[in-house]
Length: 290
Picture 1 (cartoon, rainbow, N blue to C red):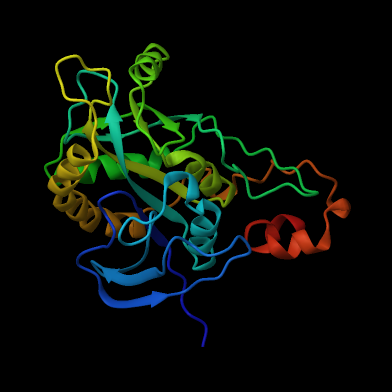
Picture 2 (picture 1 turned 120 degrees about the vertical axis):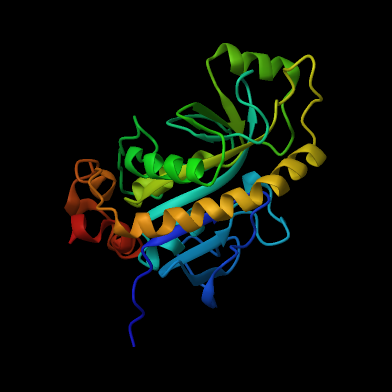
C-alpha cells in the first residue's frame, strides 16, 4: 500500500527535540542517497493535519552544527512528500531592540560558514538556484501571524548570519557582524535554507532570540545556560504557534515560486548528465530531466 504524502515538515533545533500534541504517531527510518538523517522522522497528526518532524541535532542534542546531515534531512522530508518546511532555530541578537525571548522571522540570510557543502548537485550536473530571497515570503507571513496570535513578540524581517560554530563569537567578530548590518546570528540555517530551495520546498524560520551574542556591554555574554533557559521558556510558544500554523499551511495555496525554483536553473546539457546522477536525484529533478 502506498503511503499518502505528508505535505508539511518541521525541523526542530536546539531546545525542540520533539513535537507535543501529535496523535497517530509513527517513527520512520528514511534512507537517502546522502546518508542517514539526524534522527528518525516522526510522523503524526497535529490539528487534523499529518506532519513530519525531524530533530536537527538528534534527540538529546548529539550532533554539532557542522556535523548535521542537512542534505539527508531535507531529502528525507522531500521523499515523504513534504512541500513546506518550518525551521525552529535558536539565535543571538545583534541589535538592541531584539531582546531574548523575542521571535524573529528573518527575510535575509548571510552565509559565513566555511566547511559545508551547499548543494545537492555537482559531479556532472551544474545547477544555479536563485536565492535572492532565501525564505518563502508567503510562509514567513503565515508564521509571523501565528506567533503573534500565540502571544509572542515577533519581528518581521531581519538579516540572519550563519557561522560555523560550535564555538560562540569573539567580541571582534560580533562587532564586525553588527557593522555588516546583520541582525541575528546562528549556526544552522545555512545550508538548510539553500537545500530546501533546491528541493523546491517553501521554507521559513522561527528564530528564537536567546542572548545578545557577546557585543553587548551591559549584558552577560552568550552561554549554554542562557540559551537553554530562554529556549525552555519559549518552547510552549513554539508549540502553540505550530498548532495554529499547521492547519493554515495545509489550507494555503502555494502561490509563491518555491515549487518551481529550478525551472530555469539547470545549465548542463541534458544528454551529458550521468545516468547514475539522474537516478539519484530523480526525486528533485525528475520533472526536468525526464
